Length: 450
Image (cartoon, rainbow, N blue to C red; front, side, top):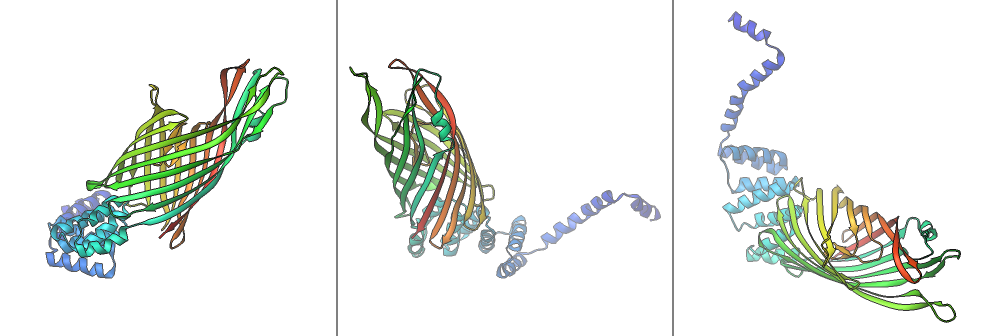
């Protein structure tokens, strides 16, 4: 006995603690095994009534480890996880509960809102189709949505004076430059039933542009060429079974404008004004699949801009690491090319967003690649002007709640664009000179929920 005590005394503290823990493990396991069905039921019910959601989940997990699993245990655990905003885990428990009672109204309603909380809106809507009639009549009006948004903003070149004073080292050159533009849009979203949603939109862009001619030894000749572009938008969203959804959209853009050109004649020549117009359009189709904590999509767009066809195919993936909308990461890759070209280019986009208040998210975005004759956001945004973008960075404040039925979003963006000067030899275009310049935009959106 004395020898045993001496051996224990000589053990260093970490080893002793480890041995002590090993000795206690069977006791802990035994304590868990002593929890009966009745005790699990009583403890979860008491914690549930006290609103101690962490304790409900802890005791429920002990029950599952002991093979105890039944309707009310899953329902209590699911509601506790829902209140802790662990929506993906709550969805799992509500589905298990429905395995014991498939038409329980409370479970179905909680599952619907857990889907919503996890961003799985299509599955939430499709769930209504399988609800009992009495619950369906109550949930269909709640699932219908109607909102209208008004968007406006201003965009401008960061160093327009430098751009207008630059001239290529060539005898003759011509430059067309968008100094700034103003943007406005209206959008109405309606969801008449759980399967179908529609978007209707109108857009107007007022361009402030300049056209400049330069000849060696002469002062530059500059003309102001303002014009307005109008756009109409329509999108159809279909929710499908098993977490799939289909999205199609189309946008038409049109404008009339006037450009100056040099017209030679017997007296030497003069600048004359020529009228032009264009009608561009963009179409979009995407198929999406929603998985727990992950949203995957395949994208196909076809655009006709200035009588040339462009296609873009790609994918995107959005990850929700916390099982809710508090934090998300999205990546999109698009392969873009002219229709008959064998030289496609990748455009890569990354987005990260996190919630800072109950209805207020901050979103950071970076886009790399030559953005030219390209569309995004289900063809709602179309880049069809003359100056391509090389990269883009943006920060947004999303969904700031002003009133119960109105929220505000603000987006600040900086991009690097390319402006081109046509250079001439005589009356023939022999090439071009490119110069990068920064471009800034600030847009705001007011959304009314009805």
